[in-house]
Length: 141
Image (cartoon, rainbow, N blue to C red):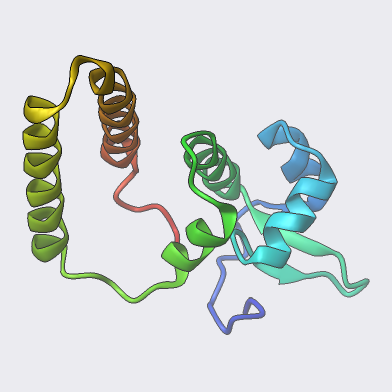
């Protein structure tokens, strides 16, 4: 069987209608439709009646999107990240290291009143790194 993207799908793979996906992910059908419109998820195929069918692992992807959104990432940015070309991971990690060192220097030089704000920023960075470390390496993009 071939998806709308030309990808071959195993006939034995369980596909879910939009309502089933919404129920398993704990979101509304409207949310699934909105995430589809933004390109955060995409149907694996359509039925003869033009119903969208999704992969079961889209539940995990919806949960990931929700965790990232809770930490302040706009849905549009998440969608762009999902469709972006692979990045040079070493360069990205090097930039993160530099940015964290700069944040530490700013914290060291900051007034006591600024320490609270810098602490909030540091906690947000830590949360995002924690989410990144929990990503399954085989998450379908």
